Image (cartoon, rainbow, N blue to C red):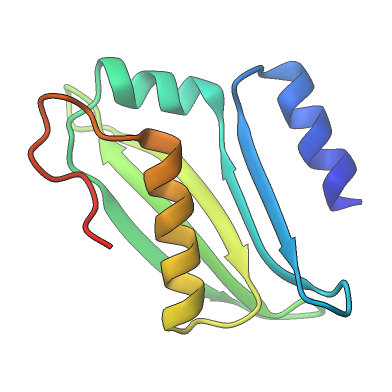
Length: 116
């Protein structure tokens, strides 16, 4: 159902970036979502400081959720991107941060966006 959900996100919000990655057994490993509106906001009016966080998911589908946020001009939280992973480790964080870097690019007036 995830591919259909991602396809629908792109249909209703063109420019949205979604990535799903599975292992060789076609089992879920990672998912990344950055809505087009969030990417546009980051590139035009958001402070160029990104805060990232991960927290554990419990229940029927355990894993981790990754979140990248910014602050707008009046210090309100602005969601930039989020993702899911099967475990929290260096590989999953690297995957999420690489997808984030690819999504936001390197804003011209920002000396360092993400160092990976």
